[in-house]
Length: 610
Image (cartoon, rainbow, N blue to C red; front, side, top):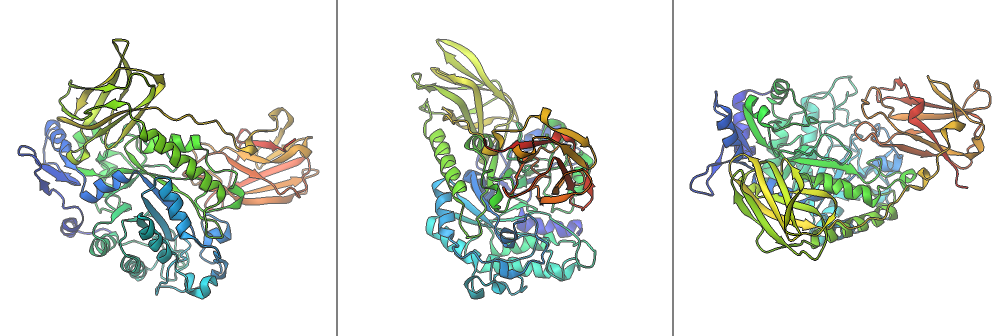
């Protein structure tokens, strides 16, 4: 839906306080969350104004959280799927050992500051006592229809002191009004009103733009203006993420941010009516690597404080699947994600899905505890002594003294983003045996930047030099940390792969393999193309066997969880009772249901344990 410019200006008064100015210093005027450049402004003027764009108070507090947990839980958990059809029997939902205290306690111990729950996913099943549909916990056998997951989680968050966030999918594959326009919008707004009115303080509302056809074959047009107005009315301090105006999607679901990450960005929130015109004119999108350079500033008419959030799951899928219990990300993977998200001026949103009992699985708990200990150990040991903040002009440096008797392997830098994001390029030198050596360099800093060195070093001092900036840089912190050692680990299924020399590709479409070593085969690994799309990547698969290449028997079917946004190797191990013959066939089907081509070099067979 598009609205008039005058309507949007009225909404901005409630949402962004656009062009509102505060004056923390006598000589500088600051713009909160959004600024429009004067018509005809030159680059010098734009760079100056960009330097004085700052976050709102809720954005500032949000970025300081650093770690937020996502929890995908619902009817999909019991269907063992990622995207439910909306037709599953509510009687499936029965988490007999639901323990939200366990969720929140483990997350708090691991250093997380907020929890976001999928109160409703695309299937439309609601985890609270809603008046808008019967497709909810009210129709489930759990607690005789009186259960309320949102209520229990809210109570656990209050008990342990964590913030509460809500994900309410706009796509609803069950509700009969979906696709009717205003009719469904009223339902969605009422669901949002229930969630924001009945469970105490809500600190973040997370909603993507997921959209599909309704029963009438029509796509739903969402009324984002009213959605944002309602949030500001009921929970004025809540951050609105992704389709909101406070935090944006980093552009992938693999856990990795950009080397150059601008919070002061030309990318507008996609819920704004002018968003499409701006992104098309500038040639950018959420996945673009450049979202704030001077080249883009020269073309831009507006700038937004719109920091990035990195969302990724601790497992291949977002919902719990018992088949993925051995595919929980290693500590090394989580550490890499931490440095590539929090360490690159982003917030990390890590998904940990509760299982069918309503608890975190042991494998996830163990990894959470390891991750929490790793992050604590990293942050607790800073070798910098004395003052470590300064205001610097371009070409000026901040020198800090270190504990020269100890090793460090990373440098941590922070800007005071309450006074804007200004650094465009910097260098870091270490004083070793009386001589300065450059050990790191980078572009943006923002709220936090962590630079990993090639090797651990000892030094007497560090010197940070501002090479390019938008006005005076405000460094708030410089740190030197030793990255804790992590023992390498390999998933058991990947420790032994059948040699490709023992496998013959007999047919390319559909992909058909032949091996005389069939007794050694336990399953397969499919490694998708990194350039794949929703039309070319297989969302579901069919694994079959044959004795003669003519008559086929299906031995395994399933999903490749979240493969479109996170194209990592997909491990599938068969039931030990499966009877395999020498011929094997793998067929894949895109989100549309169309069969897609799978290449022979994308598939490798897993060898059984000897």
